[in-house]
Length: 268
Image (cartoon, rainbow, N blue to C red; front, side, top):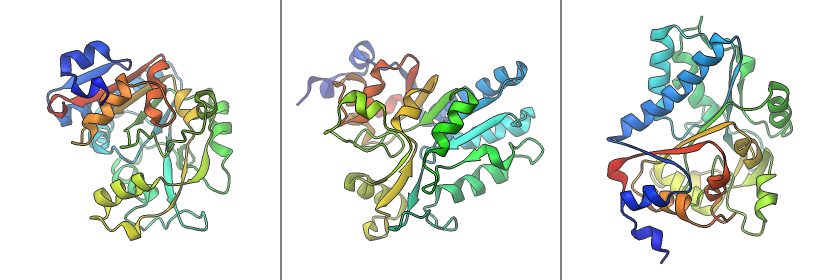
């Protein structure tokens, strides 16, 4: 067994190749993510600049605090772009219905955009999901916008970011070059997500997805991640201390210049 799985928290912090932020409880992790976003928007708004995020549906705990801060502080999102990471697809590679409880588009509409005061909300054309009918849209958009200011996300049990599943046959440079694309979900991902979203009804979990690429994630100027579930213990340890490998994609962020991973202290 790799030695890092036996690390205590102080040992882990000392040996981490991705900086680790440890909080007293999980709500503080989510507040940290929310205020990383808020601070980025406020700084850019003050300069008259736009703010571009790649953001997830999972984790979602930060959105409550983000929405609260936007509404209470009257922060304009007029120049803010949300590029969501991914969405489930049907077997014919069409988006799943937005009415589906699994739909990330549906989640963002109901639980994020509909809760932000309308006069503060960004225009609808600045709320982006990867489109299986136009996979080049997001790489081109990011280039036009001058890059991504911040990526917010979590880490899958197999080390995936967004739905960039392990592809151990690829070299690290090849994996870092992966752009937005349609792909089959790893069976590990399907199983874990069925347990979390469908009470274990694996047969109802989609087999296909569209995801922003690892290239788009890695080129973000800042990357802020969080882990908070029991099974994240080993994910965190391998991700920040294990060798870089396309078999566990989060390890590739060990060479990113501004990545940080937040966790509650009771995780480890």
